Image (cartoon, rainbow, N blue to C red; front, side, top):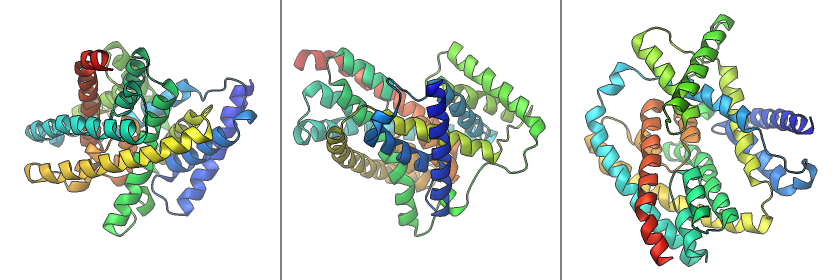
Length: 350
């Protein structure tokens, strides 16, 4: 019961902080606001939380499904007309992952002083859970691995929308009033939204889709949209709740980590993510002559954040979220391939 009350309190506090962030005109206010306040609580007041407290994984899964539905609803037959371009962008993503691995290994090993296994598995630009599992099995420092992987996602999610706003010289996405949600969705649509989400989630699990909690509902909404059976429109209040839940869950990942470890990891993460975003921009400019997508869509597609979080950024910026999500799923798959291919070398040399 105590855990439920704490979770409810965190969500309420996150909602209040998100509302304040929206008044300040921050990008993704209902994601970034809760993330920052919960991260502060997790690091500064961990003794105030119940022993062994963890933010509800099931609750986060449900609302990630909501985001998946919203992304899938943006899939149209026109998206498939871009399929030939995927050869170019997927090839570039494969190279991008390899370059990022090499750059990040240098950052964490030479500048951070991490042992070689920890440095290697902290270096991945995707595949968060796979990196943690393989790194732990190889004997890496789990605390540092966890910290660097979650900081990677958090820094990208907070820095990218702000950076794009500065680059374009005006507020973008949610800070500029952009949203793909609707205010006029009738309550009678909610049962269909729930059914589509549930069918997508369990179907994704059955098919063993990567990030099934996101990609399953996304696929279900896409099928409904393309076939014309039902267009899944998500009400704006539900989208905001989903962002609050995901933001709180990310922030609470810092529970149990010392402030010194977090500050050191944050410095390394800023350098690592900064370098990867520069590389993402370079690769985006390299492929933009060959594809129909603008540079901001390509930059978001290469940016090394989590699938769910980068999908939210794309939704907020109205930057072809289906295209972006597809490329982030591929980035994670190719990262895992890189890790598996490198495993014998890691064991032999480390």
